[in-house]
Structures are given as C-alpha cells and as structure tokens.
Image (cartoon, rainbow, N blue to C red; front, side, top):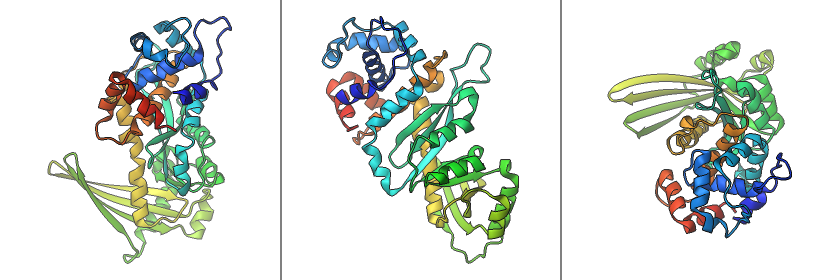
Length: 364
C-alpha cells in the first residue's frame, strides 16, 4: 500500500490550504473502491465508511471518510495527466519487460455517459496507449474537444517506443503520427483506408502485383461461435512510391485477407496496412491480432466489468480522472495469474482484505 501512497503524493493539490481531507487519503480510497467495483463517487464514500477500520491501518484519516461530494469535487479539479503519471511510476518496473519489443496499441474510447446537457452527441473521450503483451495501460489522456488525433500524438510523447511497434486505426495513419513514432525509435503498423486515398491506391497496386510465389502466412482461429481464417502478405514499398508520398519511415505494405464463418454464414474482409518495418507475413498477422487486445481486454472489460458506458460523471476533470482509475484498476487485477474472471477478482478484493493487498503488492 505504501507504494500507492508515495505515488499519489506526486499529484498536485489545487485546493485551498484549509481543506479538511488529505488528497492522498482521498485518492487511495477512490482507487481501492474502483478496484473493488465502485462506479460512482457515492460508492467511493460508502466503501470508505465500510472499510474504515482497514483503511486506518495505512491512512491518517484525521477527519474520517470524505463525503461523496468531496470525492466528486476533488476528482473534478485535479489534473488527469498528473494522476495517470502517478500510476506510471508504479508500473515502471513492470515495463522493463517491454525492453525486448512488443506491440503498443493506440485507440480512443468514448465515455458515453460523460456529456453536458444537450450534448449527447459529443461525450468525453479517453485515448489510451496499451501494451498488448503485458495487458497493461502505459498512459491515457482525455481527448480535449474530442480531438483523438492530438491526444494520440501527445501520448506518443509520454512513452518509450524504442524497439516497439505502434498499432493504430486509419484515423492515426498520417504523416505527423508516423514522424512522431519513428523519431522516438519506434515502428508503426497503420490501417490504411480512404483518408489516405493515394497511398491506399498504391498499396493495393503493389500488393496485387506481388508474385504469387512471394511468401504468405496463414492462421486459423475458432471461438465464440465463429471460425476465422487469415492470410497475410507483405511487400516492400518501391523507392519511387516512397519518395512520391513522402510518408515518414514507410518501408512496406501489408494485407490481411480474413474469411469468417458465423452460424454457417461466411464473410470476407481485406485490410491494408502501412508499415515502417518489413515484417514477415507471420509477424504481420501476430501484430494486427495483438492490436485487438485493446478492444477485447481493455475497452470491453471497462464496459462489461466496470460499467464505464453507464457512468454519469460529467463535470470538469471528473470523467477523465475516474476513467484513469478504472484503467489502472484493471492493470492491478490483471497482475493476478490465478484462474477466475476479472469481475470475480474485483469482488473478491472487496470481500477479502488479504486478497486486495496481494493484488497491490504485485505492482512492485
């Protein structure tokens, strides 16, 4: 627990000096409550009152447990970047496992319940950098004004990319992102779609002209009632095309043809990629598959296990800060390798103090 207490001490407190409750106490209770399944500030306060005796083992709590209004007010005013950075200090040792490479997936997720009155069409959005192999959030930022592109570029500046492959959808397939990634020693694998029409056209042409004897790789998967077969192909970008488009670091184009059979119905899908590293077809298949970890292991769990889409936090920094707590709570729960669903582990953390402490200790 001391690791978390020391980490939260780095978060600046913008409140007046005569506040009753210590910021670190508030943040520790809020995080532990989320780790145990809390979804709102009222539940954070209720968690604190229920666990008062346990919490006094680590916290001063000179004025008892804060009210739900205090939790709400604090989360509205503290800086989400500073809160996320505090968690990043806890994962620094774990990230050493990334030194040999790995996929870092970048993607945005709307906080569907976080919008001002009359602006349901424009909910807040969080953009996350996710280490697919470690199942770990590296950093997350609120997309100011819904600008996912700028938030993603800011994320790139916060994390170490050397030796890693950054994956992202077509929204982030642009020269600024490519330049930012390669400048930090990373590589990229971008989905190519119509927003880069000229590049996409040339990619299709190069791939269609590829010799039939060019090595390809196939993989198959089965689960959740569907069978999928995928074939990957990679070709080097001709010098004249690379020079014409002036796309930073561009070295190859990739293609994955997927055939899915669901309930007896077969669908086909072809995806094209821009690559800054000439991957083998097998590596391309693995890289693209790893990207979907951010959807299946992070975004899906946020909605199903922590009910993020149903959350109604709306004001100021509140939605972003609680979103940071959710993502980091999943990081902690996932460090436990014992069998069992995440939902059960979160409940167990609330039932069993020893289990909760065991989860926290695994962040060393």
